Structures are given as structure tokens and as C-alpha cells.
Image (cartoon, rainbow, N blue to C red):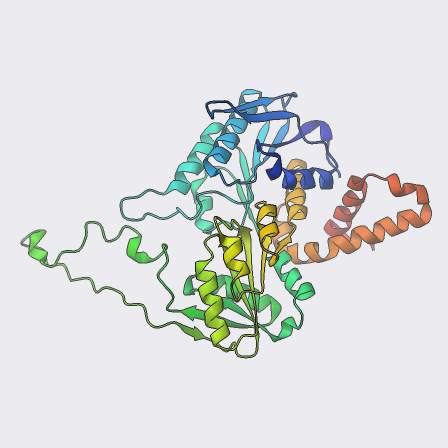
Length: 401
């Protein structure tokens, strides 16, 4: 890796070892040692962070995987950021693949936009840059007054479809609600497949009925508000019967979304697709929260396979349900860290991520084979050297051909 290791420090802010696996993979890919830090809970459940090495003048990357105790995870991250700031770090970059509270990004009745609150807290603590992945709404980037790189996991899921789904050319991409149609369209266009949309399902929490525009509540008599006002009566919405727009008969149905947490809507969609003739059903999402009894419900459902990335650890859920599969996205996160530290352009990751996802494994294998042929003792060559060579080839392919 072409970086000055003396100016780089990578830390995992998780107090639980079960949630440091992604950080371990990223440091291995970069060929650097993880920073020494202690993150733990006091007896009274207060979070304590002790950085055990100098970070003065360094680029500090804090990798935080969201655990089931999301509020503790947030406090660990905030305290780690502030500890780095008070230790005179040059830049503090948060690597938060799944941004918590991202679903609370709209005003609903008399609630609050919690995503904005969390963004303000992170910036106030001292964060100077954020790397995340597939935000629930892209507009969340506007809540920050610092640079935000919202990476995409779709190329890795597309690669999984092409390599692991038999006869994927007979598949159709499905949006389980009209709100997911744009994401489904993106998948369908890249795979040259058809699209289907399920319409009429139970109203979800993100409808415009609860976005705050019905406050104050409607009244039967407009004069009750003010005698001179004539406010039209609002007409309540009625959900139509469940329909599938698109042909799924005799096809493989691939439901795509960004988050899979409460699986009831996915199971209902799978049952509808089965009734319409789909013979195999996949569910693909970037963030697999899979809370409460989601693994058990998936195991007993019509869903054949659930594919999620490792932005959130779910090893326990995989033990409970054999249908859950994982796609590793540590490669793109490590490349983003390398580019930010070296001051290189990040636009390459957005323009060429499809090629990067598909070619990195083959490039590394080829380089390792060449080195082995020249010197069998090169087995001891550090992985970071091979990764650096593959990064150079992918960044400057013409100059090396």
C-alpha cells in the first residue's frame, strides 16, 4: 500500500470483540496494525475510551460496526472521536458502514429528525470526514457540514447474482413497495433483467401520512379553526388489494432493498410472489440488521436465500438460519481509506466500482502466481504488497499494459 504508515492510525471503537471482525479485515487488506485502544463499559454502564498510542498529527480512522445496543455503539464512537480530537489528531475520519437512526430522517408528526441530531453530535465531537455505505436516504449527507462519502454495495451484490444465482438470466428484480422501485430499477438495468413492483401492501412507517403535514390534525368543521378560513377536507387514503406490476410467473424473483430488519414485509412479499408463480425467491440488502426472531421467521418462510453484506455482523443469525449468506465489502472500505489518506480522488470508486469488485480477486491471484513462479519462498510476502500492486494496476491500467 502506497501510504506513509507513520501518518495513519486505524482504530475499532467497539467494546465487543464480536463486532471488530470488519475492522480486522480492513487492517489486513491495508497491511497495517490496528491501533491500540481500550473501549469498555464501567460497572455503571458508562463508556470509557483510552487510546494507548500517540495520534498527534496523524490521520485517524475510526471503524465502527453497529451492534445490537445501538446507543452504546454511538457513545463509543462519539467518545473515541473526541478522544482523538483532544489528542491532537490531524484528521478524524469515521468509517461507519451502517449509519444508525438513518430511518429517522424525516419529520413525522411531533417527532424529530434524529439523523440530523446524530450528524450534529458527530461533527461537534470533532469528526472531519465520514465514510458510510448506502444511506437510507441520500439526503442525510446534507445533515453534515463535513465531507461524506456514501459508498455503494450494489456492485458486490450484482456480482453475487451473476456468480451464485443459477440461471439468473431467468430472474426478475422485485421492489417490495413503490418506494423501492428506484433501487430495483438500478439493479435491473445493470443486469439487463425485467422489473416487478408489489403495490398495495400494508402501509409502512415512511408514508406521507405521518410526515408531519397532518399537524394540526384535520377537523370535520373548518370553521372550528377560524371562521374566515375554508380549508378543504383531506381525503383519507385506501390501500388497494395487493397486486404485482410485472410478470414473475416461472421466474426467479430477487427482492432488493437497503435494509432488512423486520422481515414481515419481506415474507409477505415472498408469499405474494409464490402465489404469482415465482419458483425461487432471493432477498438482497446492504444492511442485515435481522433483529429479534428474524432468522427463525426467514427459516420458516418461502424465501430461499437472504444475501446481506458484512456492514453489520450477523454470525449468530447465520447459525440460526442457513438461508442467510454474506458478501464481504471490506475491500471497497479499505480502498476508500487508502485514497483519503493519500489524498487521491474518490470518484474512481463511484465510476469504476463494478470493475474493481470483479477484477481485484483475479488480479491478486495472478500477481501471487507470478511471484510464486519467480520465487517459491515468496509465500511469506506480506498481503499488503500484493494489494498495493493490484491497486496500482486498477488505478492505472493503461500505463502498465
